[in-house]
Length: 349
Image (tube, rainbow, N blue to C red; front, top):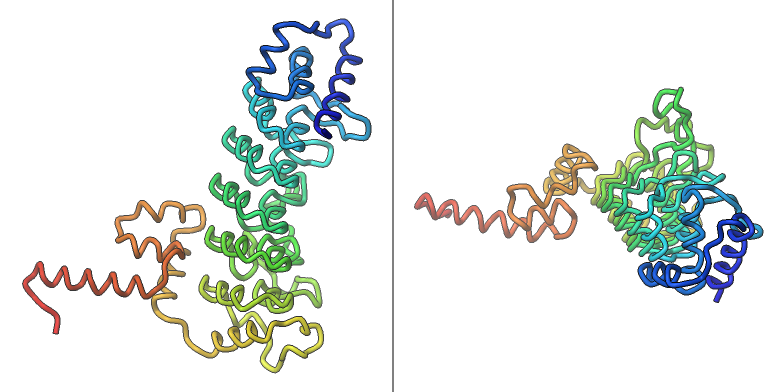
């Protein structure tokens, strides 16, 4: 009902703006609505929209910010409208007065279908550099793993990239001063384990979740010094710690030698998570785990999606993608060794 009410406001506003050119009702209007598959009030607006610049930013409804029809459709989650407007020439990456793109508002309002349509049409999965937040950050905060998967599939950067750095300054001239702006941090703070794992699988930096160098001394005093520190401080369960260990986090960045769950500022620490952390730091990591981390870093996060095409056995490819455990890889390696030995008429002892 709200959508129909808003559509009525939109239609009335358009007619006031274009009184001499308002289309008359008839077969043409019905045909447009039928083709777009839209509710009647929204379908009625489309002939009027066709008479004005499709990318024009206007105040379509009382109290709304000046924005394009595409931005309104994405906000309301009307996938048919989004698709129709794009096919009619709407620019997918135009921003509103807040620097928000249509994709960003679709993600903020939880509209997966509209987000997918925009991504397929070429929308920037990272949003706009004129806005502090990103689609990835918001999806990670609210735990929308389905939307996060779509963003990653279309090439979204899972590390912070300082959107507000002016073009005249060299890249990364504004150093990271707080982990709060990082997707990994926010997903851990809200205990969204699935999103946390998706970010790491996509190549997120497990220590600072940031592109470029980081001055650890420049981090705000009293704030977490790295992602692992943040995970422990926020009382995340042991699974978060285990994931960071598996993905190669630098455990020496956390200064907790004489600390415990009762320490000041760390009373939320999960005892089991702290125990997993201490054990991981006291025991050397396996060669298999170190090799996986090294291979993934050599490939770089922007080429991780090519792993399935590598000329390697499926268990090893799944292992590199963190879709299979090390035991399966060991079994695969032993089986291949036996096969090679058999081909050379040599049986291992």
